[in-house]
Image (cartoon, rainbow, N blue to C red; front, side, top):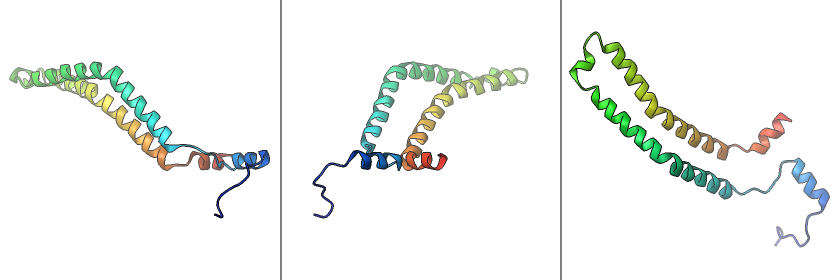
Length: 118
């Protein structure tokens, strides 16, 4: 076959390839490392997040009472609702940002970015 190599690459050839950014890398290894990190994060932070969300749900449901929406308490109620919303949405935003960053990193060749910056 024309593409088969019978001899090892010389040191000069390896250095030239390294300077051009032609390096061997495994996308599966990066994906596996990212998945492992996500699973470990969920294992460590999952119970805390779940209990926080349960407390937030309980607090959200408590705002269904008519007394929470009386004219003199509306300001306090809306501030509490915004605070609770951030308690729930902040972790989801961080996870979404991580997923977006992982998706972006798979589409962009970092070697080409580094060559452009050099």
